[in-house]
Amino acid sequence: MLERFHVPDQEVILIPEENLRNVTEQIFQSQGMPEKDCKLATDALISSDLRGVETHGVSNMVRAYLGAFKSKNINPKPNWKIVKETPSCITIDSDAGLGIVVAPQAMEIAVEKAKKTGVGLVTLGNGRHIGMLAYHAMIALKHDMIGTCMAACSPRMVPTFSSKKAIGTNPIAYAAPADKLPPFVFDAAMTSVAGNKIVLASRLGVPLEPGWIADDNGNPIMEKVNMKDLDQYEDESKNLEERYASGYISSSVDLLPFGGTREIGSHKSYSMAMVVDVLAGILNGSKTAPTGEHTGQGHFLAAYSIDAFIDTKEFKELMDRYLQSLLDLPSNSEGKEVVYAGYIEAKEQEKRKKKGIPLHPEVVEWYKKTSNELKIDQLI
Image (cartoon, rainbow, N blue to C red; front, side, top):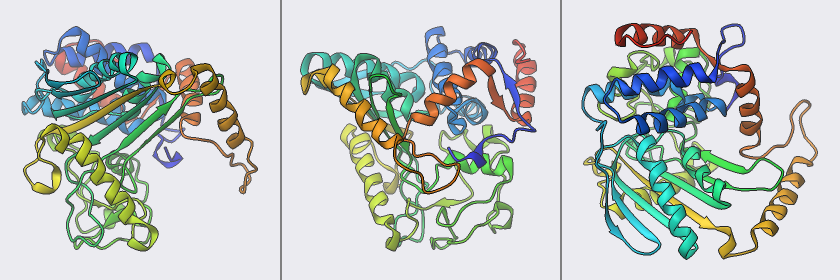
């Protein structure tokens, strides 16, 4: 995540991981979720914060989910079920359950199928927000497998040459194990910037880069812009519970496919977002974002057994050589190192586990207010 989206050092309040887990679990319990599900949901959010992916950690998502629970858009006790199954494939109805609860369990099913057939593929319909996709893809790593996760979301992206948004940010994640080096973990939206980063930008007052958003007519804005200078400005960091009550990540700005314009390749990420709609939406029978009939989210998860293709030890050793060769590349910028997806996040996790998780004062104040209202433990 770009440094600008992290809380400034002078404003950071460091919270021990254990404290944050404890209070967050209690907040989920207050919504009637089973204890096991509360632990799963909390682990998904805390894992995001530990890896420095604050867009999908507690700062944005806890209050967002509370709004969706309040409007009954999220089912706190989903009776999710298998609707179709083969030895390697499965379709699940999530019963409006929170994605950070249903998806990890679905990934475990994919892993078990991969152990038997070499690959496990799961598509889930009628789901809700899935959080940081890497969390689910990384479950496969514990089993020496390659993991994949995709999410078909509500409309945020303005397709190339369109005058209005029609497709979700539709993120994709991949995770592949290595031996001694941190695993390769890629997780990115198909828009130039993830939707939740707009929330952070609004909270922190940082400008939006050229090619991130479109104007009211769908035209790419190819210059830096402060959100307060936009005609359709709305403080994205305020009233998250209300904004997320419908279950969708609404926004006052329309996002562009990464690339920004056709000349820079926006049609490629727009098409990749369509691939996500097919696998994570249409494949499980969901009505996807462009139809205007979408409800919730659709998800797609896959686990690939490395041993089904190559000796696992050999693969992991080859991965180390491959990843190290990238780390060894000369830099073209002073103070900047060549890294790979997942490397910085792994280092950040080590640091935050020791020092604590950095939160913005506004987030800490929200936790204090919410704890008082729910009569649960305080964060600090």
